[in-house]
Length: 265
Ligand SMILES: [Mg+2]
Image (cartoon, rainbow, N blue to C red):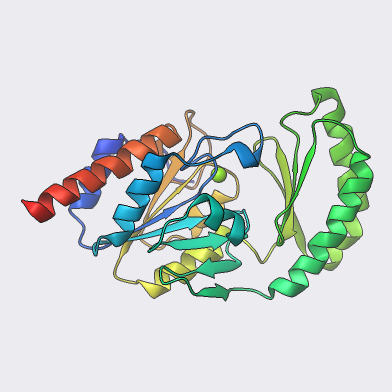
């Protein structure tokens, strides 16, 4: 495990300004946009949209947003042309030109996830504070608003009942920030990172992420920079650490301003 080094937004930007081609790969929730009580409430600011659009339009940069959300969800949240949008932890890829490709057999996966959703509904039995999110290629069971004393029972029941499916289809259960997520083990953000890196082998890839699912991406990076977004130090495969989505925004803003100054100056 690499040692995590705190870096400031400006120091990181300065480092990248020396590099000819940079590929910025960013997680969405908790990285670009602060976590909200429900996923629907985690919306980007107008400022963030403006900066992503501008960065995507610069020849020195490629930008990708890689999320566990579905591509259509992500495209609604980020109406930004000229950047890669990657949904389903790497299943659906939309190129800057708007073409969509799939890195895995998405129809087969969707069937399995629908079965899991039925199972989870049965376990929840309408209990308050839980939120099921069928993302097509993964199922997320959010419990941020649930009564803490109820959580473990529900999770245990679901994990017990889903065991046969987990075994048969080689599924992974991940515990994130107040969320249990289940999906085929073949799907992870590392796949998306490898795919993007082979498209632009001469770019320096820089990956930003805040959660468990981003660790696969950190590990998949080849000669790139990995940035954990977290206020605390923790065990991570990332090399550097920014404190918050606000710092990510500061970094992007600084990078854009300096690059524009360089281009016009
Ligand atoms: Mg995240």
